[in-house]
Length: 123
Image (cartoon, rainbow, N blue to C red; front, side):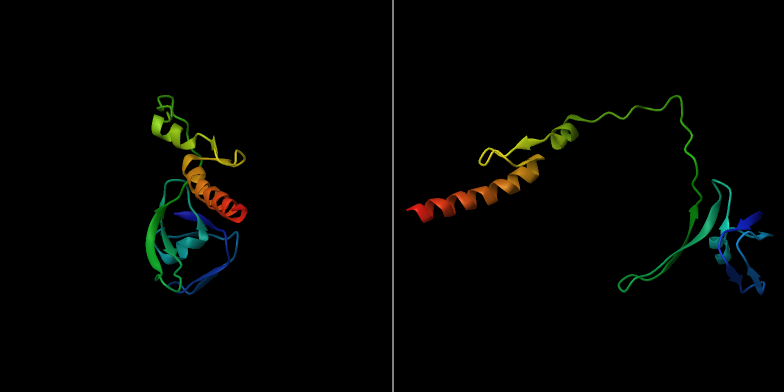
């Protein structure tokens, strides 16, 4: 497949150096394919870099591109649980903090500790 180079690289199999803009017939499953621009939907070689705790992984990926809108697409509908989760409420102790139910629940614990500390100081 004739493709265009997007980054300077060296193909050790062919002993050839490529510069950005060069075109050549490259197999999409060879390691040098990472540095070339392929058409949308092509399966190409891909290597994920490793870290201190995870090794490098050589795999393939499918080249993405523009998303085509479908006529019969199902509209995204939020369920009641998701709507309940996203609903914002106000802390009933301080009346200032506003957030999701779990955030407010965590904040209430801090408000209760402050209220208990203030009542102990007064007494």
